Image (cartoon, rainbow, N blue to C red; front, top):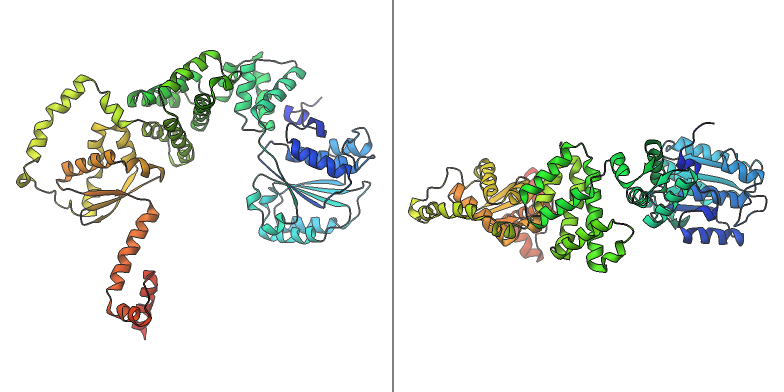
Length: 527
């Protein structure tokens, strides 16, 4: 017999077999019971949440010989042919592959024909958001004037991409990601039916890594059954490439201790072991989520999800880190997840994220006596710089080009005091120099809040003066804010023009955009 993947073999076939989505199931069953069937439905939700499966079950409820019925018999010819995919009146269309207007025009022509042998003709259009604008327009005509006894079920993972005209003509149902509890229950049930041994830890890890998708969970279970005699937590980790709990624990300890070297060593070792960067960040975020949950609600809420030894460690960590800092670390790593694609080595992005979590003030306080002595020995250099008459500014230091030319040197000097701060300055661009105000644009907006801390600004100002022998004021801004500064400067220049002053006085107006002034000047020159 041909092998059938578990996610296909155990796909829900009745309303009762649906994993969660109770609200949607109840409403659809009630519509069938009262025989109040709409002509168009939208099923929206994440992948693997049961949208297409429930569409087929609803088609059985419509076309069962006892139907419309909330309880399809599963034994009549209609139910059996819908189950095995051979019913000619239940048509499934993959919009990702058939997204053009020709396919929808073909549907528009065929929808006019009466059903072959069923009470209802059902069209299930999967990933409907992939249709082209022209295809949507053609589909809209059919939805506006549907033939009798034709039902459309549109399924999508991105309802926000559908035109409002389509949305307004559908009864909308939103599917939630399946909970970890629901996935664990189904994983254990299927494992038992397949005579596979699985531990609680193994089932929990598969569920957590499945992102709320039953299809993902059963696919991972399928691979695990093939590979292992017993599906333990360690075996699942090795199969999927998930880092050990000890690695996650030690990384957070290094961040709590403000140990930059420890952070870099741990992340480098993960990268060298061939782990996937995205998988690592997701696991670390889950670890942080559990720690935040335990710290706020109590660690008893994690019983059954975490090993007792791991819970003991997490309780200890919770004593040494604030809720606010845990939230900040979580945001930094969530942003790093989006940054991975910009780096040839994704683990460099992870290193920068981890270093950004270091508390610089505490790190300086924790330096050993030898390092403090080295800082004291460097004091004479400060005394020499205190003589204003001996300061000789570097040629070009009062220009933006001069600052940019020496930026690498500035970052190296910062690194001597703070590797974490230097890592952020590596991703900063000197954008503009106005008198003594240096405007800097970080590559990512979330850096701005951290860099604008007074301690970090003071450090940079001190290093700028040390390298360029000139005092600067410093401001970190987003690209949008920098454009606004430029715009304000241009408006001020425009307001000084005599012709603009005359227009303002005559009409009691204000200059709102420099582009308008430039256009006036251009037209006047050509006249």
